[in-house]
Amino acid sequence: MKKIFSDYMNRTFAVVFGFVALTVVFSCYLLYYGAVFHGVNEKGDALKESIAKKEMRAATVEGSIVDSRGDVITYAEEPGVSAKCVNVSYSQLVGFNSSVYGSYGLRGKYADALFTGDKNHHGATLALTTVNQLQNAAYQEIRGTEGCVVILENATGRVLALATAYPGVEMDVNDLASNWSEMNAPEHDGFLIQNWRKALAPGSTMKPLTATLVYDEGLSDVTYQDTGSEKIGGYTFRNAGKAVNGAIRLNGAIVKSCNTYFAHMTNEMGQFKLQERAEAFYVGKKLELDFGTISSSHHLFASTAEEVAAAGFGQGQLLLTPVNMAIIGQTIANGGEVKKPYLIDSISNAKGVSYQGATEILGTACTPEAAAYVSDAMLDAAASYGIDKKLGIHAKTGTAQVNGTHRASFVSFNDKYTVCIVENNTGKAGKNLTASAVRLYKVLDGLS
Image (cartoon, rainbow, N blue to C red; front, side):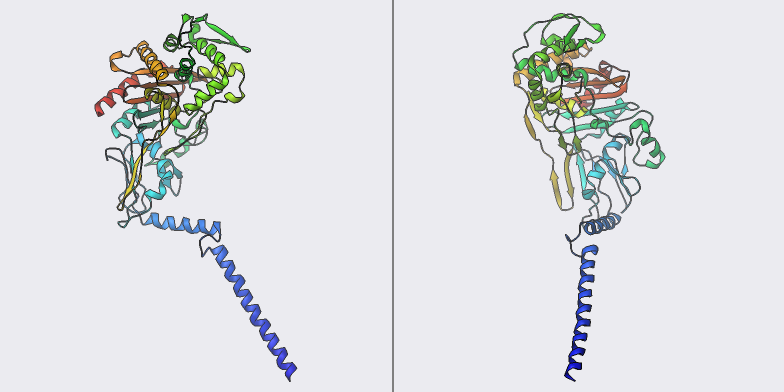
């Protein structure tokens, strides 16, 4: 009898133990794959967060984006409905955040703030450093081109305008469906990207940077005899239009944009000095900015003598974005001090300000004396483009050869602002952008 009872108890225990074990295994399964607790399973956590964000978005009025004066750029009136952009000049900057088309631009980068509701179910307000009137004017100057305009405030690094455009297609974030296929056409290498991200040869707008090094190396008064050609390594460099400038020093080389002078001087100074100076201006360094990552390259560490010489006047393997070009101009305007561009003025909601933009000094790129010398030379260069010196505009143009066409650029500054205009895939020369720059300075004067 005892043996029968013992066998019964053993079988009962085995059944109970098995049931408990299965319950524990099943519970662990649910905990792991269902992500009941945060941190147990990354995929489960991501799924929970995605669902929560969708629910939050459906119940939230998307936060507005406004300019530095509080004027509206984007606005929404109902929960779960995409905000409207009031002007096409901002379309590629503010972008979109769509369940159909994905996310892009500021509305993608700052989606967590814009779509996280406060007690009134309104997302945060994103205040930019831009001025709508200036942004619109900048866009009109490049509309219909593969162009870009970057305007910075010298003293602070604030981005006052950041516009980009394309020929043949115009992004309208209020109606993406109407031209989505055109925006993704092969001629744009896929989706339209913001032109301020495009790193290509800068042409002669690199010369002011190289000129600061020539000055700081004590070579500004050295006379170079320009015969119209300069052979370095296995390559012969020539001036645009086969110009021959004769005896020339640094100031004249900037004004006349003498390629042979800068090739010769760069070769004399050497690749490591040019690399150090380029990196001091943040050329060849990644810049993590509040509107995206800006990447440029110089390749000077592994270049031949002729490639280094070419980089000295903005060709070769040197690749800069319009933002990098603007930083070169702004740094010279600031006496050699590099200030980080920033676009986000503040992020705020009903609880107050959660983020406040501020000026950040990245370092010193050259001596104040070098910056002053090059600044004076750029004032003379601007006069040679037909700009009245009384306007106080210092400038350098560039026309780079890129894949059988031109990249035209115009980098300039006055005592308050830096204006950079770039057009890719164009038949224009940099000098052809002069009138556009002068018009933008007039708009800036009207804002003061």
